[in-house]
Length: 638
Ligand SMILES: Cc1cc2nc3c(=O)[nH]c(=O)nc-3n(C[C@H](O)[C@H](O)[C@H](O)COP(=O)(O)OP(=O)(O)OC[C@H]3O[C@@H](n4cnc5c(N)ncnc54)[C@H](O)[C@@H]3O)c2cc1C
Image 1: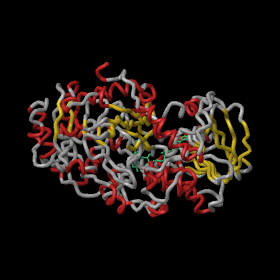
Image 2 (image 1 turned 30 degrees about the horizontal axis):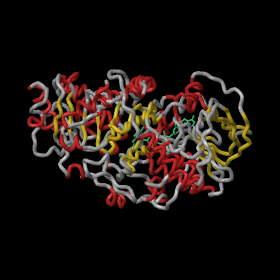
Image 3 (image 1 turned 135 degrees about the vertical axis):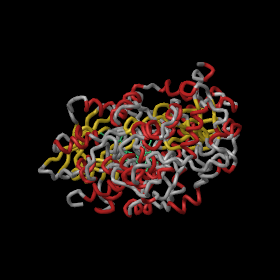
């Protein structure tokens, strides 16, 4: 245990606090106010309140969900203090959908409208969270959740219009700031790690595109697997899947093949149709984790074909999507997807741009480039006398129409105190599954539909490394590790934007992105999601840390990695309620799209309407924006 360095303190946190308290004082002009010792919830207007630098368990961090779970478990509202605050609009949820709803409301009804946004987390952005590190004196950023602008279909006019309002010209910025081929250009390749528990021996197979990328270079699969622990049969089967062109379903027409593949999982396709060795099944089990948050046992073979996974070449399937496909593969298959752009902190930059546009005092600057390094002044988010207020650490417990539906009462809890505010309108930009508890007045059929939105749990971990020489020595930029606790890891993307610069030299510190999707293979998707969520909430930071240190040692150790020496900080972004659920032909009823649960669930209710990506049935930023626009447009009088 000690050789993994778990006992070693990570001093960066203390250094950081010093740096940022200093930086925050430049904004507030004062360091004199000491933090309230009795405050269970830190006041956002105190110097040093700067959540992006917090390490340890983040995402749904301790303190953000307990009140909501107590409500779910039947706790009553109890005594409520009336604040006397009255708004035009209260938005529940400070993610991109909630922030976009505030933006659209002002655009429709005027910038003088009084808006309050409430969010249960200590930072804004919802899944679009910023992880900020200061390594060797330099700023380094990673996305704690939402990775990038990328959707299965082109952004709608509404979503593009919002980006334009925020000054984000996606194609132009992508050309200017992104360097997606940097690592390949210095010879670092994709890799796969075979772990001894699953495959018999630890082995790192280095070779571009070994997993799913068609760019595999000149090496054959047999060459890539030359020293792997796979048996000769498994190697042959792997090569057949990746390079072969067999028609496994010769008796079916193209459309019949597609229908058949939409009714079996990718795992069943590989096992029962392509008849591969069990080790090959084990290898592909986690290949779907990053896109769907579940394994190959719970994603249809046709959806995997839609995303370009191997094994289908010889089937000669006709192009295009069918109704029995999830929106992600169907969208990419038919449109090729949207434009793409990765900011250093992912789509947290969009959240920050929205916050700056709603509350200009909170961040300096005027462009999508300067916002990346702008220090947010959290003390400006919830100030008396401003038209837009963003109140963090505030869990909404009840939303009820009053006065014949002309007014809405919203009760939230902050710092243990239940408080009531009033509004003319309310947009629920939170998670669908929570809404029936918050709005018990809703019709039963709508509540049942909302409850069906079981989100996918997943973990995005940011690991600060002293340098990335082990990657350079091994010649790798990432590793797919299907049998390990984290099923993949990636060196941080290279993006230079505004004053922000990514590290180019392996001797420099960098950030590593590691993904874990807790699932329970064999169960229906939503049961896997529930099991994964329970697991995440029961897992202490120490378990994540031990697994990070252990896994990195096994993969990078041959490249000289020493976890005690080389790990500078760890932020575990845990998302028990992660991706919005999307239609899955293996488990969901085969009903027309307009009869799906998310459509029934998002019906307006008096002066209360429903936004959030759940309401779009798609885990994408443009869905969150489009749903915000619809929810605002549905408000009576808006
Ligand atoms: C790990 C991860 C990676 C992703 N990557 C991408 C990507 O690369 N590209 C992409 O387009 N999309 C991605 N997504 C999807 C992402 O969810 C959407 O892009 C978008 O950010 C969702 O925004 P939202 O506002 O609808 O929901 P959220 O971001 O979930 O915001 C809702 C907010 O409401 C809050 N809330 C819930 N209940 C209450 C309550 N009772 N009181 C107060 N507040 C409450 C929540 O805590 C949350 O902060 C990713 C999602 C995850 C989890």
